[in-house]
Length: 403
Ligand SMILES: *Cc1c(COP(=O)(O)O)cnc(C)c1O
Image (cartoon, rainbow, N blue to C red; front, side):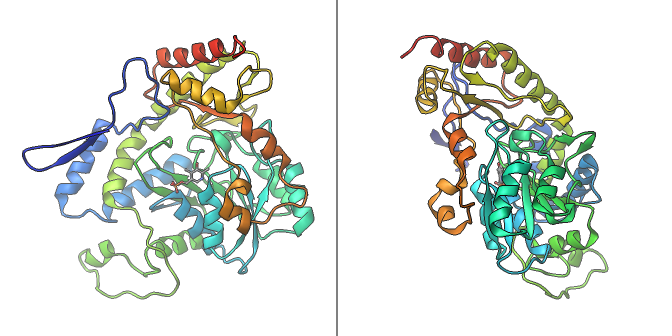
């Protein structure tokens, strides 16, 4: 990392130049149109939530086939807003996959509810009807369930809901990996009570930070629209429109979790590139699979039999048949300039959540078995075929010699 200051006093922080041989795990691509759109907003005199946020919501809702989209500051805030809007009894139990991002469980806690961690199947990284049934057996019927499409693979929503004894309107999707995921012919967006998307720097539609709630439920959408901005009945943009009034009321508790027009303008421009980026991700994932198939000891992600994978992540399992354990492999790849990551540390292994989340009495053996094997390889639209081939060659080489 280096910094430099221009004659006008602008200090710039630069990432180290990627040399030709290194393969970073992630790189945020902000297209030229998004940079231009951001400049126009900055010069417009209106930078917070306003016309850009509204247009982004309309375009996003259409993209995922939902009646409503509500733009917010993050996926974590989106999950909390939806859970609050479902008006579940305080302290109610919400099923959460053990193998997910910590923010998902924290959203449950902040909504005044109790996360019950559900074990995952090593083959998919996701809960199954069997693991949901086991969790529910110990604690009784939960109030709601959070489903997560791990890596972008479609989660079996219907089976999971049935195993939990919950109808679709008691299910909320953590769709942070699932922009582009389809179950059968239908995109993730309006399959359950609500879906929550992330525009974090590494996600499939990066803005830097940001989130979106999509739903067909008019009341829930109205709640989220108010509750993202202090519970106010009307936002600043509407108050300042011609004919608008300075008056507003506050009828419920709210967060400060609105999306700025600066973010929304970037998101709108990025959204136009998304179909191409999704194709690119699928192409690169297929290339990994073709080149890694013969490497003994690596288990590769399976494309779904019914639906579409969004290929947010390409996660391999480093099985005992591979000569290096995952932690050693991460270090050896880093020495070769190849970035990788682990998604995720199971929630029950994170101190605060270990203390606050409920767990099935028999533990979470699936997540415990899978966690030491998980390795996420670089996958983003800017990755070249040559870089994928370099990663595959390194994995094949390190997989040959016992070391
Ligand atoms: C990234 C991520 C989140 C959180 O998204 P933010 O927009 O950073 O709040 C939640 N769940 C999963 C599975 C994620 O990967």
